[in-house]
Image (cartoon, rainbow, N blue to C red):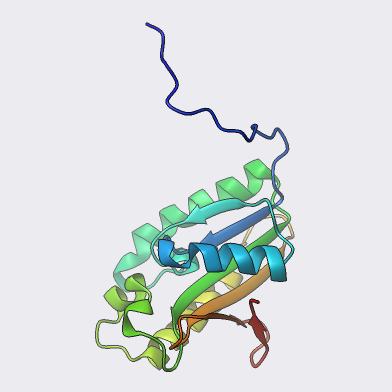
Length: 172
């Protein structure tokens, strides 16, 4: 039985693997802002994607999420080894101080249902520290960047560098 294609892409498959892996939340509302940040600020055009609820937070063993974190870490390690990853960009997200409540990451809202924005941001920072300590064990040396995308009241998205507190990286 022959299959009639529904659509043929104008862009061909690339045999060259990207050397950058982006771990981010699967919240599609941030996709265009993240793509803009990665391209304009980080200079990253081609990258592997590991998207899941909570993004890099899914790599942290937090409470009842231990089994999920273990499985996600296995997938993360597999991608890094199989694809020869040289750079990892971990992107957390949430509402800025005065940003819209529905911009808070649903994964973290589930983990901390009564948590304030500040408590959620602090948990993300603790999770980032854990991922940096545990998530790269036994893996080759890679460059790692950790940011939080913060949705502002006017819907702009500000990227904050979590490795260098106080250094804001605004996507233009």
